Image (cartoon, rainbow, N blue to C red; front, side):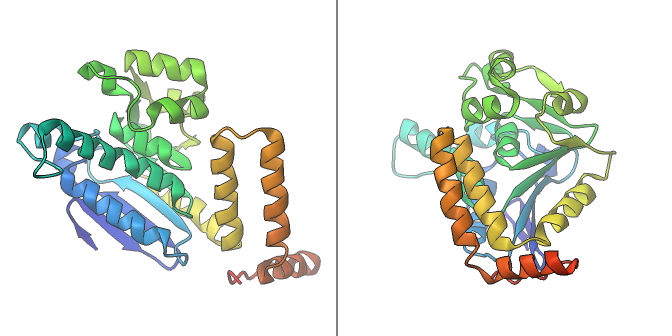
Length: 269
């Protein structure tokens, strides 16, 4: 399924979202932003889909917000002033970051070529990032004369690479290549050129072999941890989650499979 610059491919348990505006390096147009919102809203309610892969078509991942779209006079909201319309668009793009964090499925971003500005923020909003050697990352906001903190970058980057490295990237807008991204922990791994999607599928398939409810609850706990809860608070949530999980059929199956030394068959029950 495609349209408005987004291709949505649903498998039995894995959904691939492909940003499909290759001539614009998959820059975020109004149509693409709306299509992403619609796809993420559907995924939030589709528990049969257990993992989401986010990729870019053509030569890059995403070059950020499409400035030519805005320069051509495109408006997110009609009937209001310029400032209000621009603010509505800003909120719409930024809320994609929130939705990527809130959907129950782990999200794996596969990055080749440029991931700049808003493209970097989308990649950072994913749970995991896999890079190919051509990948490059930059918080390019400051180079446009605006704040380095945009679309969640000032919250996400420090939690991924640490405060000092994040500060350097946000203050300078410099480009990080794939090798450095792997070294500083911006990506979990760098794989051979052209193999990023295969590597992401392999990882996703490992996740889908596990109890789906377990995966969803793990993402929930990781989100709470990122939000800055104290150790005591997070352990309290972990305790409640673990006892809740032990009441499921999948937990009973997991214990049986472990004692019988066989792979478990989980049913999300």
